[in-house]
Amino acid sequence: MDNFDAYVGLDVHKDTIAVAFAEGERSGEVCSLGSIPHETTAINRMVKKLSVRFEAISFAYEAGPCGYGLHRHLIGLGHVCDVVAPSRTPVQPGKRRMKNDTIDALTLARLHRAGELTYIWTPDATHEAMQDLVKARRISSYQVRKARQRISCFLLKHGRRYERKKWGHRHRAWLADLQFGHVATQFALQSYLNEEEQAVDRRAQIDGQIENLMSDWVLAPIVRELTALRGLDIVIAAAVVAEVGDFARFENPRRLMSYFGLVPGEFSSGSSIRPRGITKAGSSDVRALLFEAAWLYRLKPKVGQWSLVRQKDLSQAAKDIAWKAQLRLYGRYQRLTQIRHKRSQVAVTAVARELVGFIWAIARNAEAGMAVR
Image (cartoon, rainbow, N blue to C red; front, side, top):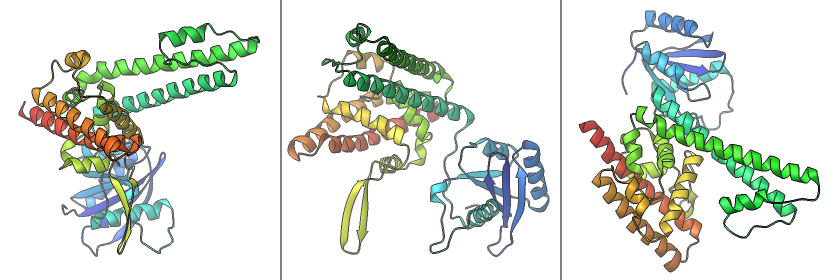
């Protein structure tokens, strides 16, 4: 860790920022500067005040709803600023925790100086904008599912059943032709159908925006290369890349699997070793998308007509890795379900974990190609 003259902890809130600093020496002073308004003018004044006393300053604050604007502003002023993972901030065992802004800022400054904090990767403004768009897509997809669930519950209540594939053209025509005895019931169904149609339309609009804005994103080549994998369309690939950002920070695929919470947990003490389910760390939304993609590997390996069209402009290395993934993951699913008689959900979890390894391989190759260009 680099040596600085001062380590500054910031407890950031919507209206205020609590400021504390720790001098660079291990036994140096740890002092609170009180709270300042969360405004650019006040932040510049605080930085100027610290710069008079210290030459090299390193700032740190916990990630939260205020985003990365403060981080970018301090970097723009020529200082070092790290964003901290709140869940990884150490807490002294046996000590009753006191919660106030001043203590939190002092604790951050002290731990920042000691090198005991875990820092997260911070995206640039364009990458953060894509993250926001992908998050909006996840929310719209959730709204579609909830709207359809309401319709299904409503029809179940009134004894109307459709036994074929749902939400296709025929199903929608069947829904449109439904008749109920009371006008209020008919109106309720139509309101649910309108809500579902609007949610589907919003999701389609966001999908179109993701594809249109891809050309302005520096990581767009990685997204396109990932679409060579079965089950990863442009939306799922964009969600994965938006969540990870820089794949180079994961030195091997196992670390990326752990980042997505797909590795098995363990609860052990002495000679007692008890395995547990997956850790479920990281983004639950992206993990759900990986499960969705992994289900397709229960089908026999095949590069169909649509896959050929999608892979037309991709690198041969990505195509080779994608085919290798189909062969391995299909065999993995079959062995787990047919030979070891595991439940399909367990098998898909294992397939999703290994799929992340192939995602890592394609992304690292794409990053290498971008560096060469």
